[in-house]
Length: 135
Figure (cartoon, rainbow, N blue to C red):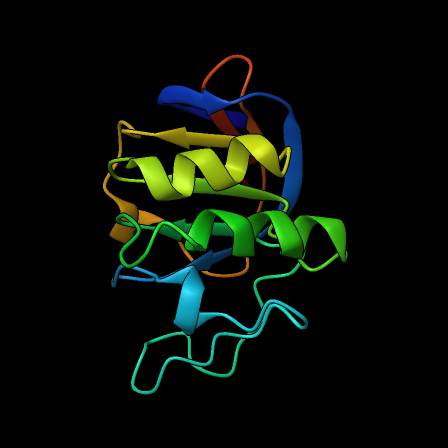
């Protein structure tokens, strides 16, 4: 059975990958290495993990507007998330997703903490949905 979680479309396109879920906001400017995609922010729940090719789920972004360009750089060097899901999109992450062609949705109809790391999902930014197989 395919389950569909509806949200709001932020950046168009489709991306499939394993969920990487953070309960904490992410700063791309100083929190993620733009060359490797590894979370480097000390004490962050995802510290040491790579965002590359994942469907990255986190509440919202934080930090400088330069974070948008870090997302763009990650996309250009092949280390960007396959897609992004936020509780509430804000300008820094939304802009980075759009210029980096990273599919993105926000306002999912289920709580972010109900999503399990490692589940393979597809985000369809055109339709504003997240889809995954259950069972």
